[in-house]
Structure formats: C-alpha cells, structure tokens
Length: 297
Image 1 (cartoon, helix red, strand yellow):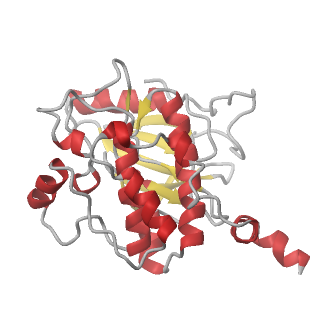
Image 2: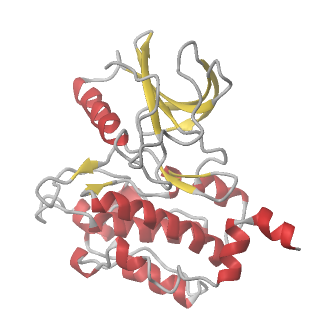
C-alpha cells in the first residue's frame, strides 16, 4: 500500500478538519489503548500535529488479517461524518503497518463511565451522536458489527466518534453469515448464524441497545454470566437484565433495540426520533456548548 501523505477530501471538497502537514518523520508517543488489530499510540508529526496510530505487526499477521486491514483502510478512507473517526493515512516500516487516525482526546465511553456517573441527559446526548454515525453507515449498507462503549470515542467537547472498524463489512446481499463481534453485545441472529439465514443492519441496533444499557449501568451486558451462558441466552433472544431504576424513556429505548426478531427493531433513522433522544433544549445546549453558556451567564 502506498501511504497517502495528505488526508482525503470530504464530500464538500474540503480536507479533513484541522489536519496539518504529512506523516514524514513522525514520532510514536505513549500507548492510548488496544484495538481489534493491535495497540494504538499517540503520534506527533513535524508540524506539531497530534494523531492516533494503530500499529499492526504485518509479519505476525496472516493473509486473512492483512486483507481485513486493507478492507478497513479502503472503506474508512471513504467515510466523512462528524461522528466517525477520521482516517488520515498509512505508513509501513520495520515489518509493521501503521494506520493514522484522528486523535480523540478523552478516550472511549467505557473509560468515561468508569470515571464518571453518566446521567440520562448525557447518555441521551451521546446516543444521538452514535445513532447519527450509525445511520450514516447504514445508509451506505455498511454494518459496523462491533458497537460497544470501548469502540466509541469521546472528545473534550462531548463529541463522540465510532471507531475500531476492524470487524465492519459492507453489505452485499442484505445479510452476513460470519460469526463476528464481541460476545456480550452480539445480536441473537449473529449468535445463531448457523440456523438463521445470516444477519443485517439490525444487528447493530441490538448492540446499540446493549451499549446504552452499558453506559447507564456502568456494566457490560450480561455481566453476571460467563461467555458461554451469555451466548446461550442471547441465542434464545433473552435480553440482558434492564434495571427498573432506569427512566421509563431509557428503558423503552433499550427494549425497542433488544427485540429478539431483527425485523421488529427500529432502524437507526427511526430511533433518532425516540423520546429518550429528544431531550429538552436546555439540557442539550449545556452539554453541547459549555463555553457559550458560561458567556451568557
């Protein structure tokens, strides 16, 4: 692969926002975390621009993994949406493949809920953005296949980005049949891929319901179960426990996502109109524009 030294243009002809310079003589910084393909580091280029670097040891990876990476890069380069992490370029060296991505400063939503108690208003604000990015993918017939808090990043302004597309796949014949995803967030039709005729966009909606539940409870879905018992329950269409202490709007949103039959789940576009996401203007403005609100005071 020939590494691009400039970001790709967006649909309106502009380049990726705030990118400066190239990846010549870039430096690898501290470890940020781990993705589906390997560690992710902070990077720094000669123009002083910071970015994230996904590092893959191409020598140690099989041809199937490399092909999957090439697919990820190819499709990521086509995404231009404010709620999807921006792809910036690639590089090769010392038997490793480096994928350069937008640096999202506050880490994952999983790390966030481990540090803070997330209220309905905040979860609503984040969920609306997740759905906006998910709807963008689904409009292009792309299934993410691994929606969970660990794969959703948040920056200091509260903007969230879908990330870690190592498992995503463009939809070709409406359904998939491969067993992909992370066990506790998998939809029943994914678990039952040998007995159900594949799965489609609705599998991401089940995972979204699990992700909203995760944010509100600070626990992964089915946290009381080991993997195999959890998969057994998922395969039977039994949703994870939903606490009665959650608000009625939050419970209704989660339950609509966690319908056993994928045909009964709303689409991403339909969920954007759910009452859980149509918070009051004052709540949204405080979350979205903290500086503006301080100035008005």
